Image 1 (cartoon, rainbow, N blue to C red):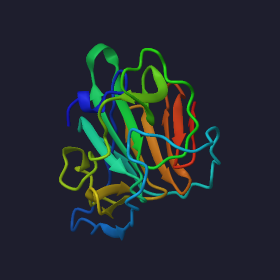
Image 2 (cartoon, rainbow, N blue to C red; image 1 turned 90 degrees about the horizontal axis):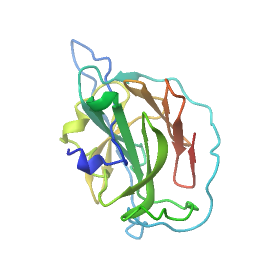
Image 3 (tube, rainbow, N blue to C red; image 1 turned 45 degrees about the horizontal axis):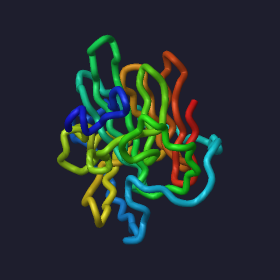
Image 4 (cartoon, rainbow, N blue to C red; image 1 turned 120 degrees about the vertical axis):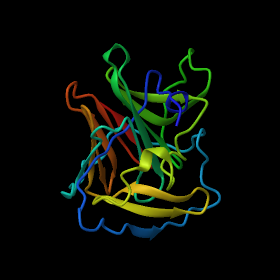
Amino acid sequence: MTRRALALGAAAVVVLAGCSDAAAPPTPTTVTVTVRPDETPAGSTSGPVSGSLPTGTPSSGPTISVGTHRSVAFGSPTGNITCAAYLDQGAGRGWGLRCDVLERSWTLPPKPADCEFAWGFGVSLDAAGARLVCASDTVTYEARVGAEGVWWGGQPGSQVVSDPRRGDLVALAYGATITMGAITCQSRLDGMHCTNTTTRAGFDVNRESYTLR
């Protein structure tokens, strides 16, 4: 994965590391997800509604730590959200994270004058804060089985999701958490929730809405 491909405006990255069974690694769960061929493609938007998400009741689950890895990628159990993160040590920027959402019904603010590319099809988080994505690329393929960032696949908290357009994806199971430096993401029934534990900035995102904190 290239840093350009994860461009969040500054950096994009995600995390994970986790526990494993020395005797025998757990077998990933395969979940088949049917994706309608008429889903809104990444890079476009439709429909109403943005704002606050319900907090939901998070289930406790495994925590995956990135450890010494410098990149990580994961999907949501529905396959609709894909996140990728990498470590940028330049100027102390640390980890950067980006999550793109395939199908969404967000109401977006006006496109900024300095955004030359597709606007608002994802969100990003780094040391500078959380923001909507302006980019000419996508991270929706970064979590495919066999990709560089899914080294954590097979650990507790991971599952395999089958998507007819992208093949098998490695997803962060509901209730599981992944940590990359100061950034922590938890997968819940109401979406992906990511926070920089140092700055307290973050985002909550799902199909219907997004919140930047």
